[in-house]
Image 1 (tube, rainbow, N blue to C red):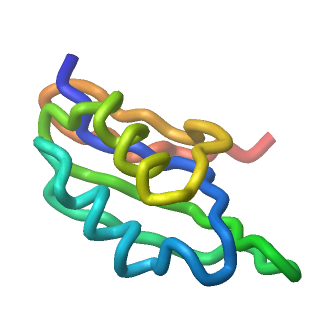
Image 2: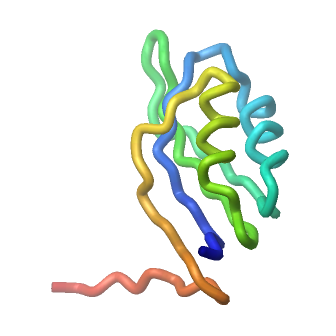
Image 3: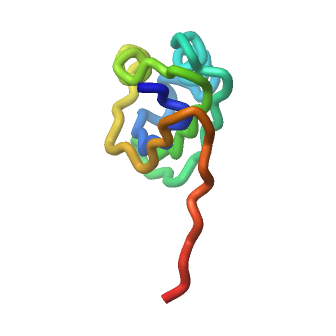
Length: 94
């Protein structure tokens, strides 16, 4: 399966891992071409992140392993794009 994009809801401690360390860990995974990390929440001890990963034939299991090995945790997969090209999500008005 050719995973092209993953959008993950990730949690981490305030100080460790740093966003740079987390992005380095994810970037090291086979098939990853780019990583975007956005902070979505901050509280006293933790930080919520929206992590967007793009590439070709991304190794999902290795992405999760690298995130967890860095000290962060994946809460959910919020978007998954698979195939020979990326298709942007079209929002419909009700």
